Length: 199
Image (cartoon, rainbow, N blue to C red; front, side):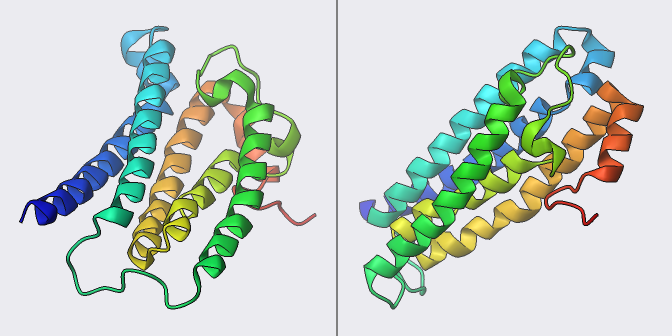
């Protein structure tokens, strides 16, 4: 009975952390909106929201690892039917491009990645091709641990992040339009959201 309790507690913590990550991340990408209410301190507050969101992200990754030892007692395959090395290979094939794109986005965005500022200019580099490289890269990372722990349930569960990350980008773009005005609107016209626009 104690083992069953641990399994459900881990799952509930993972769900709760996912919800809190979503809430705090959305709050973190709206500094210009918040500035209208509380002034310039909004940017510092959004930085703290971003830190909180990152902490919940780490907690979810820990929950995924714990799930390997305490899977939910449900009628669902615990492992994939193929050899474990196949899952490891899939994880690597996802991890390499995802991390490369995400890290390139982090480098080109600079401090804005974690600490928004009114003074930061629109980014260059990979942002000249797509508007949300960090989101695309980070989205892929949600499947790395599920495949490494060989869990079909976690792989399927991770699909919740697709609409959530899209929502993150929509909220962020509304705020960026407020911050950069016409410059960002023009940028959107010529730059793809997740994939480069065809010339």
